[in-house]
Image (tube, rainbow, N blue to C red; front, side, top):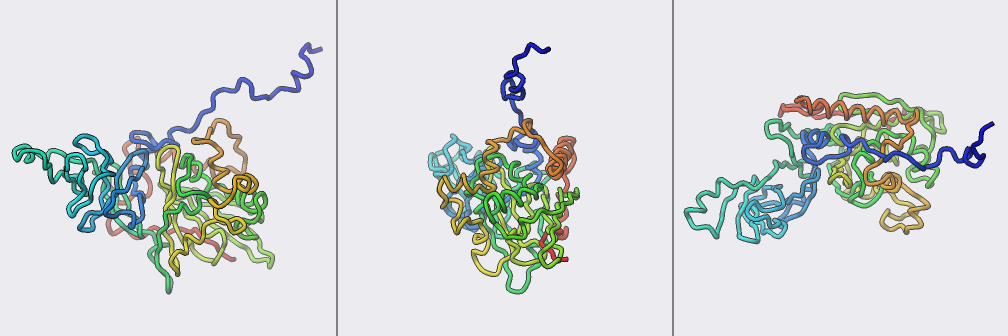
Length: 397
């Protein structure tokens, strides 16, 4: 007979003595010289709306780097390191001029490509050496109403991709960009690791619980039906097909895709229309513990993308009280509450998490590919490359 007290036997499985939790660091962290950071830097990323690049310097933080976005007097956008190459003053306090941005401290003038154009305090002989100084900078391009930056090795710079969903427009349609983190379920800047949101794309089952029953109908009634789900690897990521049967017996097929490097190819969850995906979102890691989402989509009226933001009883996320956030949580609450960087060692993945596992393995493969000196999937160096196409969309039949 055991001499262990009955109370002790009943207490097996408490939290006492657990090992320190860990995260999948090589996927979560995005700073310079980290495995995922190096993968991320092989792609173009949206760093602002075109309207964000103006004659007033704008601070942006991207992949853990502090940068300044501006547009010089000739209309050229520029993205440079925040701290002046002379003595380190922030170019946030600089002045944008016809040829570039001028530091407030000693007036050094830098072009959009970082070249030092003037050093007004230096004698003529010294100023002639200004060509030896270059402010750290990154190439930028504009497309779809967004400013894109490439922050990787110059010799590996790919072409900025085009997307069929944003190139082939229907009658009366135009492309609109939005920087309000549509799909994030909360404020513009979301205070948790980018992966906590990105892998949510491969989790269609939370739609039935979080967005449909637990917090009431946040989208539409048909999304509350438990789907039959098929997960498939693609050349660029993971495709998720959810099958539901409508009241009239018609099959409703919904296809979502998670695409390198951070694309959310997600059809409208309110199913405003059937057909191919209407918009594309890019999850931009600000640093290891915050991100935001830029979106571009086909619309017929200005502000249409913003009006797609989730509302609960007519209220936007920021209009809800703390009590309402607790009672009716959404993506923001579910993902941010995992912690700044989720403790993956504490998870107990189940059969419905196949998509999560598939996506993590795919990212690991791409990280390894870059670390071995290869090019990641999805980058192209051909300026004549056709637009990328996706199967994503809401379909009947």
